[in-house]
Length: 154
Image (cartoon, rainbow, N blue to C red; front, top):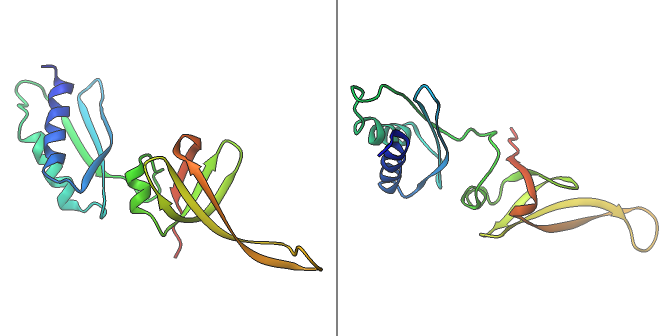
């Protein structure tokens, strides 16, 4: 079994012990720097990173292959990649870029195919002068999303 396959199997075993965690990114550089990025349904704390790191590191022999290992959580400003990430962010404001537009709106729903966004907009009244506030909603399939990030507001 090659090194990458062995590490991948150990990583999968480590994540299986913590079903609330899931893999965002995994890579091994030519100089054997293992980089793992994880996320969790309830966020990721330091102990989660330590547990995943140990599940890999304690089962590899540095005498056989020297390596470095980094396990990190997906940053707050990292783009969302998987439906599971969208689901955990329901109720938060996202900035979603599609082929044709950029929308900043509240994520109201997410399933395995698409997300639903809702926002308020000022539009001209249908009758009379002036503007009125209307609630707009849109459903965007994941395949149409080029980039989506959580908007952090203080």
